[in-house]
Image (tube, rainbow, N blue to C red):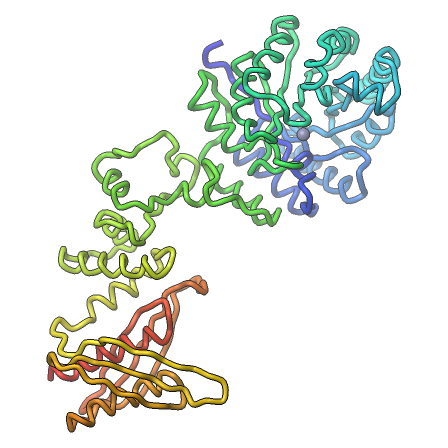
Amino acid sequence: MSGRIIKILDTTLRDGEQTSGISFTEEEKLLIAKALLLDLNIDAVEVASARVSEGEFKAAKHICRWAEDHNMLDRIEMLGFVDYNKSADWILQTGCKTMNLLCKGSLNHLTNQLNKTPEDHIKDINKTVQYAHKAGIKVNIYLEDFSNGIAADTDYIFYLIDNIKGVNRIMLPDTLGILNPDSTFEYCSILVKKYPDLKFDFHAHNDYGLAEANLLACVNAGISRVHTTINGLGERAGNCSFASAVAVIHDHSEFKTMVVENKTKDISSLIESFSGIRVAQNTPVVGENVFTQTCGVHADGDKKGNLYFNKLLPERFGGQRNYALGKTSGKASIQKNLEKLGIELDEEAQKKVLQKVIEFGDKKEKVTLADLPYIIADVLGTPINTRVKLIDFSLVLKLNLKPSAMVKLEIDGVQIEANATGDGQYDAFMKAVSSIFTVRKETIPELVDYSVTIPPGGRTDALVETIITWKDKTSFKTRGVDCDQASAAIEATINMLNQWLQH
Ligand SMILES: [Zn+2]
């Protein structure tokens, strides 16, 4: 059994689309099918349910036409129902050659939902299968609610398998997601041992968060094909996630798949945008945090020969590792980010940048790579001799009242405080600063230009860079960077005072 290839049927376009609120367009469906088959090399895709809608029909037809042109029609499958000719005719008209026929895998469903005897059900199934065969369609069967069915009555499952004629694969869905790894292994083993010549699929649902664990159990029991959806989309808690399934099979079993791992992140992002459902940041394999090392100790470990290495390298799944900058950053995270930006800084400058990053990390959640050049410019532009220190300030903005500011500066070791009102908060701040220097019989440089920028990507929590142009004898610029625009302007002003007093 060692090295056996496990096949994957992806059902994002059928079972995944049953997630409430999701409806892919025809074009999106074609793009997804292409990516699944061409880029990821997934063995087969289930792309539609028969007789659902005109839109479903058009999309299915479109996908089949494309697949036929690319010699992949045998990898397209569609869900059909026990309805003699109706599903088969619908599927035939799309151009598809494989029907996954939904049969009742539990006696409870059969008697209570359809009010039929097992004998009648077998008769109907076989008629439907025969009709499909005559139309040139291969048939696999789903034993719907198999997990409850086999738990209640093993003989009913045997009866079905013994009497349904001419099907290619038998697909075992845990429709309500009730299994655990032990019961999955037990039930799958019973069938694989009793029917060594038949081919079985397992279809997991994630109601207990056990979908991937159950998938691992089923392949260990000898199941040859498993069902997944991208990002685990599906009804309720969803299906087995493709990315996790592949990682689990490759890293935790002796089996292989034929899929291309390094397209995993791409397909996950594509489905995120088409479905409008984002994966949680801490989702295994494809979540944003998986690609981000926040802790400085970890980044250092990566530098020193992958001390924090595990097999789930982001690069393996087509992602790129990021080193988050924040209050837990270390020197190594700074270096990794500088490398990415192609910036070289000496030890001293790196230390200052790190200090600033930690400072900002306390104020906001995350400092990003895009923020870093601003911080560097800020740190390197700050004069070394600081004669003026900002001890305290407050800005007041109130309805029907002129904006006002309080400023307390320390100049050459002496603290002075002033208050002022102005046309805006920053104007009030500048007037207060100006009045402090008036006391010292000095006139501060005049503000001639003021520009505010935020890093590309412009999130509301991004850092703000303020560049102010001043005029004294000559004109010069200073810069301030902060999460808040007023604070950035104030920092640029303090930088200006220090530069000005140096001359
Ligand atoms: Zn399902």
